[in-house]
Length: 449
Picture (spheres, rainbow, N blue to C red):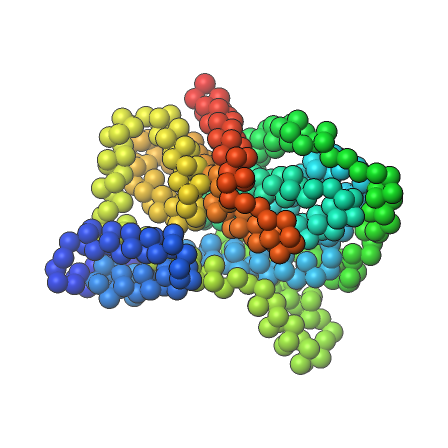
């Protein structure tokens, strides 16, 4: 059955207006998500099912609306990174940085920030902070320096660095999958502005904190005693992980030439990683390791995405997004430049207050509806990059704006160094506004001058 028939196979309950029903389901679902009173995956799945029960979608249409490429990409990378982490390779890099800076607190601030940004670009924000923050506490405890500057630098760096690539931040994964963009499309377009933003961030932190971070020689000597090589717990796994990670990144880069979806590459990489991880084990050991590898997947996030895709697809099929698209085009007078600037600032401000994932998931089909009236996909690319930059950079706007922020705050609280919401806001809002300003200027120069 053709896709366009799937969504209209059943009538809306009580013959109500499909636009009103779909909009009500989405608004109520989002309001519940924002309160964080219920698990977000449960909310998204319930909302998706109500779309079906209400007759906005059929089950077949709801499934057709799910972007399985995104789910495959997320699942595959979670498995690859989760297994690779067991080797100690990421902790090795952090300790290596300590030795390269001679345990100088000022140099370490920027080095750990850069490492966080690079890891976030190649892994993802949440995984990166989970790996870097515990090592940061070990280092700052031994140096007897305040960990706060390091932690907020790592928060900002994770959100900025994750913007640089297809796999660095969930909004990019959503946009890349929806538009069939390659890994190199993101690198070529966004890495320059990310590098510029990180440079400004480093200069600002050096002015505000760098010169004040001091320790004595005895503390530095104590830190230098920690050997990077000791963090490697499994040399064989390290070699296997480097091979698989390198091959997957190479696959992302070359995928556009072979017309292979990024999700397929990630899943294949995960399967090969599990194969190498369990090679030579007994039957019971092999099954146990495979089960543990699947447990590395954040299934809450996967099912949240699945439900969210169905909810947004219901909104699209009901005609709500097409209506909003026409209103949007009228407001911006059909100007690509006005639309780009509006999208980047609205995305950043909204993402400061709410999770950027549902926002971007809703905006993607909305932006698609206005492409035909504004010159097509190629002409609209600045708008798509604005959506990516605004949503990702907006994650620095507040302590609750991105998952990585919340995780660092929780780890810091358990360590006895709480990051308070308002104190963080004094840093986060200026950083967010400044970085979005840099991004807006970059888009203007690159596309409209």
